[in-house]
Image (cartoon, rainbow, N blue to C red; front, side, top):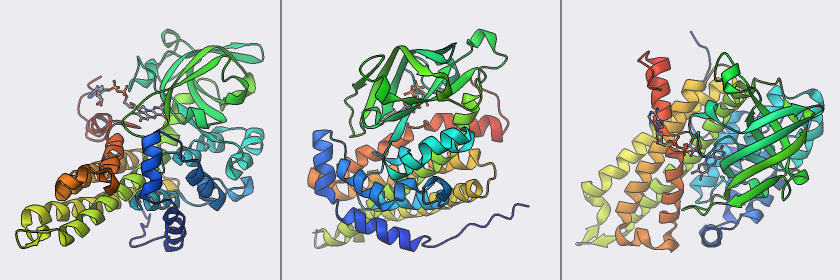
Length: 390
Ligand SMILES: Cc1cc2nc3c(=O)[nH]c(=O)nc-3n(C[C@H](O)[C@H](O)[C@H](O)COP(=O)(O)OP(=O)(O)OC[C@H]3O[C@@H](n4cnc5c(N)ncnc54)[C@H](O)[C@@H]3O)c2cc1C
């Protein structure tokens, strides 16, 4: 039997209070302006960096705050529940896990303290490609070793925050698919110092999207990087990326929970205050029950998110739990967003309420960083033992 304990109730109350205070300086007007201009929320990211919260997962010996993953999830949940978005900087929290878990001591000493202080931004994670999509092992970006260098050619898409990063974690194939026993072999991860290559052998083009996510496509044209940019062993990159994704899933689950809480709070307040036909709309069960259901779904999804974080923090396998948590929390947020739209009637469309912006933003997490179907097929095949579809 597993002895992991899962804290219930309002855990990390002190962190929630401090994050709430920071977020109070960045109200709806701020996020609406960023959204309208497609701008990077630099002031918010700066405030969060200064607070130390972005270094939550970096151990103290490397200059970070050294908190558990659960605390990181609480930080982003609080930001999202306040009406903001951590998506501009959440990756600064978890991408460095690849260095922490698989990098050499020299790489850790060189990068982690500077990432912890915010001097270096490592928040571009280049995995997805336009042709391979979710079929990651068939990606085409190639890294070829030549002496003390690797030469990289290929293309990535949806590489978020590439224009706001100094460093990029890049997944590329080092051994051709035809020469490896398993498709998951022969992929490697590299820590690319973008400052050396942007505008020369690395080109970045922003993608205009329905949310303000600072996402881009990136092209590599004979990009030379030093051989010591390789993290861990050559050919094992896919495994390294998968192990880091559990932290990413738990953090995204936290953001979705915050979104769900935002929608439920707004819906409840409006259902109580909007009076037509001689009373508050919330007295009608057609309005009240969907909000109550959204609350119930959110409470249940939160339990799975806490379980995934508890397993991760105890060093236990948590791939299934992290993915299920991400799926349930994203669905809870989306359902709560739908309820919030419906509760507000026409006013849901007025930008000043922030509901339509949060509704657009919450939709992302049913697709990225992994789409719902991929999680369902994992559950179907690997947990329930049904046939593989691909
Ligand atoms: C705003 C945004 C930011 C992003 N940021 C990043 C980033 O920073 N770094 C990065 O690497 N990627 C990023 N992504 C990419 C994201 O992870 C992918 O979009 C996502 O994994 C889905 O891949 P795809 O878009 O290629 O869809 P596809 O893989 O083409 O899939 C399309 C649809 O078909 C379904 N499908 C495909 N195959 C199957 C199957 N066998 N069974 C059932 N259903 C199937 C999928 O579930 C999906 O719904 C981002 C995407 C967006 C939109």
